[in-house]
Amino acid sequence: MGTFVTLIINGLAQGALIFLMASGLSIILGMMGVVNFSHGTLFLWGGYSYVWSYYAIRFSVVMRLFPDAVPLTRFGSILTIRGVQLPPDAALPFVVELGIFLAALAFAVVLVFALGYVFEKLFISRVYGNIPAQILITLGIQVVFTDLVRVIWGPNPFPIERPPFLNGVTAFGGARIVHYNVFLIIVGAVIAVVIHRVLTRSKVGMVIRAGLQNPDHVRAIGINIRGYFSLVFACGAALAGLGGALYMPLVGNVVSTAGMSNQILAFIVVVVGGLGSFMGSALGSVFLGLMGVAIAMLIPGLSVVANVLVMALVLIFKPDGLFGLAVKKHG
Amino acid sequence: MADTILRTKDLSVSFGALRAVNQVTLDIEARKFTTILGPNGAGKTTLFNLISGLYTPNEGRIFFRDTDVTGLTPMQRVQAGMGRSFQLTNVFPKLTVHENIRLAAQSYCKVGYNIFRDHRKFQKVNEKTEEIMERVLLQHRRKSPAAELTHGEQRKLELGMVLALEPQVLLLDEPTAGMAIEEVPTMIDIMRTTYAMGTTIVLIEHKMDLVKQLSDRLVILVNGAVLADGDPAEVSRNPEVLAAYLGGGAVHGSAS
View 1: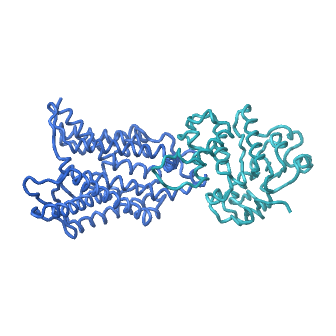
View 2 (view 1 turned 120 degrees about the horizontal axis):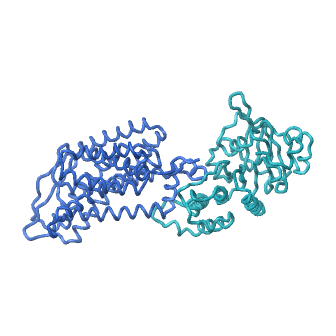
View 3 (view 1 turned 90 degrees about the horizontal axis):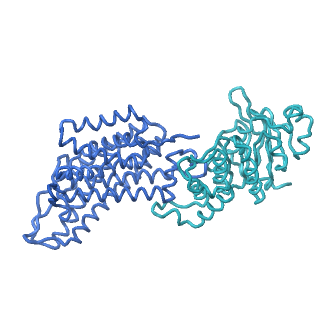
């Protein structure tokens, strides 16, 4: 029973992270028809920029408050990351720790939003309707900007820590509940509710939903849907950036290959859940998260195969995805 | 000189060897109800596609309020005040009736990009949406997804979306096509009210009996060219029209 609860929580936390990537990818693909292979690099940039700004802010705050704190090993290249050891019995107040964490998250999300906006304006906007060109150009962005991460922060992985207030484990019956996982589940659920409300309640959301059904007709009633594309792309990027920022503290180390591996999961979710379906990407992510954790425990050798197998089965039996748009190009 | 709102000058387009629209020159008067009548294949929809910008003419120009709009995209023409409905129903099937009309109202009211503001808080857009739903008699269906409407209701919804754009000229392509007979009179009422409110209407039809009492002016299009143009009563008595298109007895019947 205890193991079961642990598994569910870990799986849901994984699902929440995948969801942050998959939801943006799904809407970008469904509404703009863009196959975006640069999504993983946006995730990676979110991760590195969060880690860098978190450590930079925390270092300067700690050194100011505790002059006798001890700086730790420096990692990185052009930009570096440096932890700091507080004096014995000293601690930053919770509010300060929370502030540092939120500031770093905000920095990462805003930076990746801006990156996404620039990508759309500079590159994506030139290749609408041309899928081979989209694949080439977004893969190109993926390669260049992933290497740029290696140039800026160095090619080697390095360990990082979670914010102290999110670090901990509670034993509950036989289950080990990792606090950070619970935090991820809450963030995932809140973001899902926010996206859902934006899609169903805001006027931009209405244009997006209409655009997912028939972009040409949106234009026919005088709405410049291209103007919304940059915004949608940048928001999708920001979600991926948030995913990356929250992913790094979960795994406890920073690796430049994290972008690609998580992007593959997000693409599988989009196929399984159905193109442009918000519900599909939410449920697909949870499903993939739970399945991933279960398989990793029961038959570790099949972790990768299982995901691809699910995708293959869905493609064979329900090619539009489990929650695909029933009405795609109408009229 | 009458107040001309829309003008085509020597408009022509060919598809391969077929000259679908041939040297059509029309002056559409503001606040008048003009009907373009012609048999299937006469080039009526093609003419609309040229006017609304879906096709580019081989020759000729289109003027809207004395401005040459021949080079504008369909979207720009809609924004300039030219609204059109399509022969095939064009609505967003998964949005509700209310959302479909809201979307058009929001396009007209030019709201910005703030994604967190609740769409229900834009008063002007809300008022417009309610008014239009009332005009096209769909208030009772406001929460239904468009996909669940009957064909006739979908046509009304589509007309509502065009009306929400507050077009100065309304181009209607056979709005009663495929409608159940019982639904046709309400559609005619909606057109009549819209016209009475001061909108210029250009209607495409092939049913003579439907348009005779509605129209101020009748234009007969045959083989892509204007055959007759004028007062409906006169035009429908014109022997040339009777011979070429209406074939005598068909005047009161409906070609389909």
